[in-house]
Length: 249
Image (cartoon, rainbow, N blue to C red; front, side):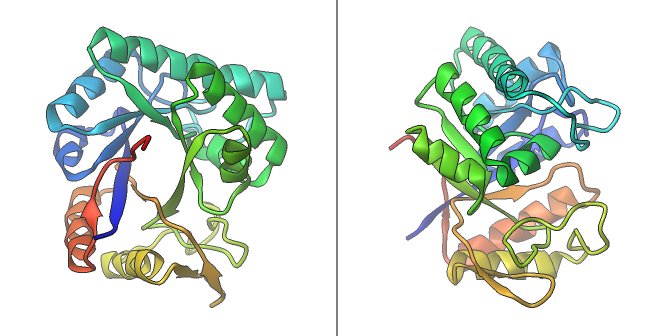
C-alpha cells in the first residue's frame, strides 16, 4: 500500500490545534515570525508529541499584520538568516521537550517566492542544511524549492494542496485571484484523489498537469478545517493509501 503524509500548519493562534492534531501525520509549527511565540511553539510541540505527529519548522516573513502572506524584499543572506534562525529556535525548544524537528516547510509568501525563484530556493535550502542536513525540505511539487533541496543533498518532500487550485504551469492560483480556493469539500477531495491516484492535477484552465505527491497540505485556518480533514482522511483510506509521517529513510 502506498504511503502518504498529511500535514497542517498549526501553532498560528487559530484555535483548532487540539482537534486537528490527531487527524494529521506531520505538523508545521509557526516559529514566531508570521505567527506564534515561544509559548505557542512549546505547546504545539507537546501536543504533537502526545499524538505521535512528526514536528516541522514553518518559517516565514516577519509580518504578523499580513500573516506572512505579503512578499518582503530581502537579500539572499537575509532570507538565509530568516529561515535558519526560526528553524534553530524550534530545534532548541523541541530538544528541551525531548522532541526532534524532522522537516522544514516555508510559510506563505516565502514558500511561494522560493517555489518560483531559484536563488531564493537555494538560500532556503542552504539554511536548512546549516540547521541539520537530516532535515526534510518540504516544497511545492515540481518547484525550484524541490530542485534546490535535491541539489543541496537534502531529502525533499513534494507537497500538493487539497483546497487550492492550480495554474497550467503547476503553480498555485494566487490567493487574491477569484477561484484560488476550492469552496466545496467534494471538489477538494476529488482533486486529491486525482493527484495521488493518477499523478496529475487539472488546472483552472483545464490543462492536465503532471504532479508528484509526497505530502498533502491541509490548511488549519479555514472555518471548516476539521470537517474537511475528516472527509479527506476517509477518501485517502478508500483509495487506498496509508497515512504516515515523512521519514528520513
